[in-house]
Image (cartoon, rainbow, N blue to C red; front, side, top):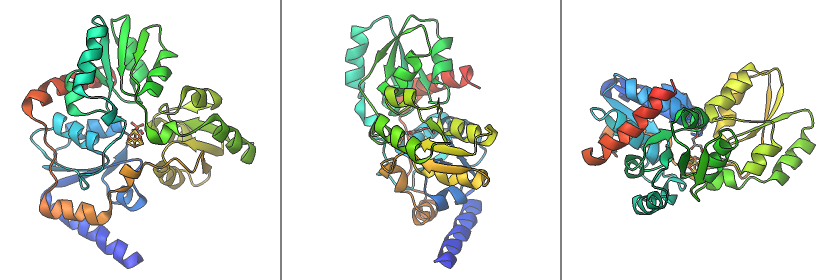
Length: 305
Ligand code: 13P
Ligand code: SF4
């Protein structure tokens, strides 16, 4: 088993050189996919790397909207998503038609769209955000009313940290929305001397019942810098692998066993190898969508550097 894994890892490295490729993996990917990547990070960090890389091929080990983001920012590169079925159910909770209808109801609002959305929805938006910069970006806007799309939980998190009027879209992440305040109480009872840190995609009451809320990159930074030795983690289970690897002196407990995103688990080493061998599946975005979508993403990158 170990040998097979090692063989697969070596094959990935070999193909990566042959193809002049860079492998980007989201923090929720399975352990061996994280281990074979050049960069492991949150949506924000990975989009910056995609925009700046000199590699000819980007293998995006994550979900569809992330690979689309890379294709928007780096159209001259070949962007591969090893498993085409890896989507984000929250991104599918907003369509262009529904967004246009809502914009008509709020003609003065600035449309702020979470990167967990399709390229077509980004193209209909004024500016994008990730969970790492949503508060900073919203507060930078010269607007009184914000239409926040599609995550109502991240939108509520922002609303609690700004004076602007936030109109929420009714979308949510199935994985994070499942966590309850009861889960927080149970975890605290099991680990009374641990702090609780959650992702802002959790429900507002769960965020309030916790000690801190950060993006996945923020949780990693917090874990590195804090003097707390025991941390209860309220985000997708894949992050625990990296947290333990980077902080062997600390203990991490998953807040709830329901914290698994099936879409993030589709990508395997075999699929990464196949993608590099066949240079497929390729993710592209038509120019008429890519240009306005890029504008929304670049506005975000200009605010949050
Ligand atoms: P981050 O941007 O915090 O990595 O989160 C992405 C995501 O999909 C969270 O569910
Ligand atoms: Fe989408 Fe939630 Fe999975 Fe993140 S964890 S990719 S928001 S479904």
